[in-house]
Amino acid sequence: MDFLTCKRQITFLALGLTGTNLAAQDRVTHPDSVEIVTVDISNFWRAYDRLHGAGTRAESLQIVTDEYLEPASLGLQEYVRIRLNGPENVVRALGLAPNYYAAVRPHTMRLGEHTTTIRESARALHRLYPRAVFPPVYFLMSGFISQGTLTDQGLYIGAEMVAADKATPLGELPPPLRAVDLTTNVLPCIVTHELVHYQQEYGPGRSLLAQVVREGVADFVAVQAIGCTSTAGAVYAYGDGHEAALWAEFRRVMGGRDMEGWLYNGNTASDRPPNLGYWMGYQLAEAYYERVIDKQQAIHDLLHIDDFVDSVTRSGYSGGTPQ
Image (cartoon, rainbow, N blue to C red; front, side):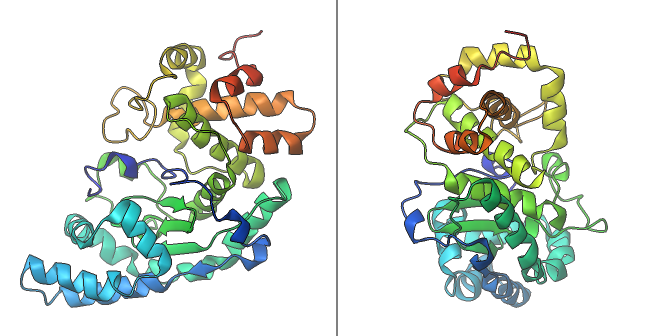
């Protein structure tokens, strides 16, 4: 799963909660106490420096294992389990984008300086949803697989995917990734989106609708909290310009499990922007929010959905046409 072939790495916010929030009761409830862990970044660059002396691929894999994966934080251990799998994806990513990695190195080493920004985002979410809980935030080198994802054990930020600047060479990256904001500007947007996922307590559902609601609610609540989402602006611009047609299309397929055309399709989208499901879910969330007088209750409701089909009905959304 390198960043050229993995369909799920170009979600612009990465994925939602990978598993249920089983340990929420053990998590921090005060936003100023959020734990931020950066040790995996320095371990990665230690491996990187040693790789220059590797004579074989096997040697390279062993170096990554010894210096990066063996001393892994609990967060990196989880990330290996759910995304990275093993040292092969690290070596592959470095081989595909060597100039990019070299350029972002100093910026990744300073990501710990963004503790204040992260905690400000957590405070904003806490004001919007006082019952919020906050897992540890781990910065790690993701193998260019995702900007952000999480499990019930923590939130994982792909450091190399939030550390570019205007001078960073992007020519090695596939076109969809060049459209993604890879700078630290996007950091609070990613963190807040993923923190919203952490609060979601939903009934079972694996349909397209269920996943669109999960992602759209995370985008919507993040915007209410801090005013931004890292989902590409082109996604929302296209959606707003084609609302009625997209709603008619989505209604026909929302009960199925095929995500293609709506989610995690950054490598296959051609005639329209990828990940329009984020926009679609946002519309459903916004429509419900606007109908409820008690806005704090509306946020609570959006984070606690038992029946996804019923949630569409209760939203009253009609594709932009008057009811």
